[in-house]
Amino acid sequence: MARYVCSFQFPASQENFLMLISEVLRSCNFEIVYDTDDYMMGREIPGRVSFTQLVTVEALVDKSHTNQQEVRMNCVIKNEELPLKVNNHCRRMFDTVKQAIAEKAELQVH
Image 1 (cartoon, rainbow, N blue to C red):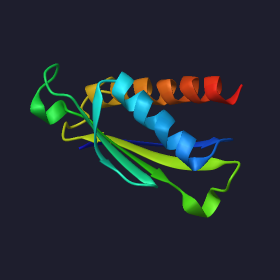
Image 2 (image 1 turned 60 degrees about the vertical axis):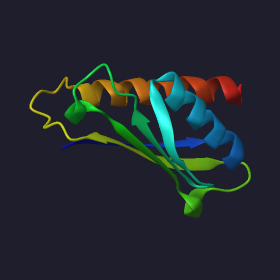
Image 3 (image 1 turned 180 degrees about the vertical axis):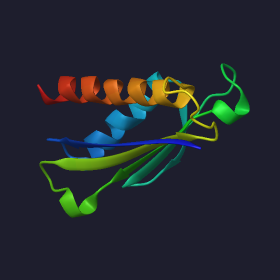
């Protein structure tokens, strides 16, 4: 199973940040399958890759480091594919989502 993890910390409210993550995931070809006030799960929309390559994103707000002015989130991006190559589908989706979150959050902050 391929699995990639990253963390983000942004000056934003938790509600605004979760809306931002939802927008980013949708723009990266994910559908939101589960959404609460501190957790979101997205699943890659089928059709472009085989079933085992479909990627799942889990975004969890770290409440121990989150306050009114700042949000910290841990993000796990994974699929069932064995990562036999460094440049596999899961890694490419990880890079895409990570970059999209950073760009979207930067636009929201400034």
